[in-house]
Image (cartoon, rainbow, N blue to C red; front, side, top):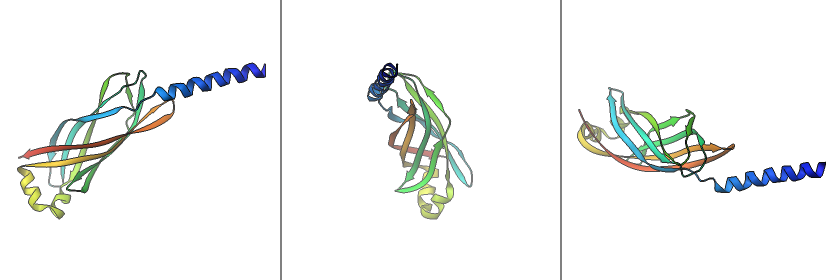
Length: 154
C-alpha cells in the first residue's frame, strides 16, 4: 500500500516538474497610449497601458508591476500596481497604469527642460522595472526596459 502511494506521489511530482519546464514567462512588448492626462502645479499625470504577450498554453496571474520612470538618468516617479489580473493563454494583454510625476522634480533640477516640455518640446522617458507573474505558486519576473518620447503642449 505504501509503495503504491509513493509511486503515485512520485508520478504527481514528476508531472509538476515537467509542467514547470514548459512554462515560459510572458514577454513585454511596449507601452501603448502613453499620454499626458493632467497638469497641475504639483504634478504631471501620465496614463498608459503596458502591453505583454503570453506565449503559454496555460492561464496565469499577474501579481504586481514595479516600474521606475526615469528622465535624464534620474528616477522621477514609480509605477506600482498590485491588482491581480488573470491572463488568458496564448494572448496579448494590457495592464493600464497612471503615474504622477512631481513637477518639483523638473523645477529643482531641470527648470529649462520643464519650460521646454510645457511648450511642446519632446521628452524621452525610460521605463525600467519588472512585472511579476505566477503559475502554480511559482513566481517569475518579466523585465521591462522601454523608452518613449512624449510631446506635451498646453
